[in-house]
Image (tube, rainbow, N blue to C red; front, side, top):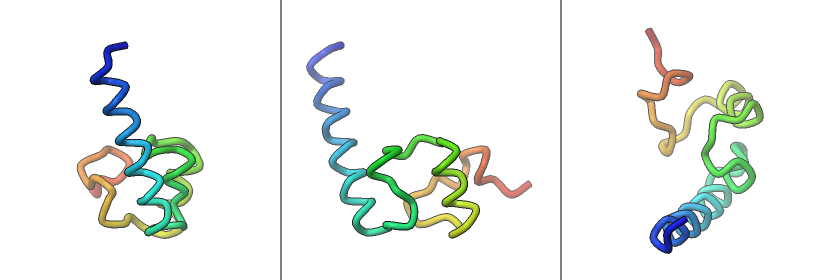
Length: 62
């Protein structure tokens, strides 16, 4: 693991913690944006928030 990847992970984790405070229904601080079953259930229950990538397969409407 390179120092740059460590810095990127720390920055992403901090960003997801802030996102969790802004959008508490999604639990971003726990799954840090990965498509875990818990995260997908939160999206199903609450719909997507502005942080969700609509091109991500589970989010796409076909």
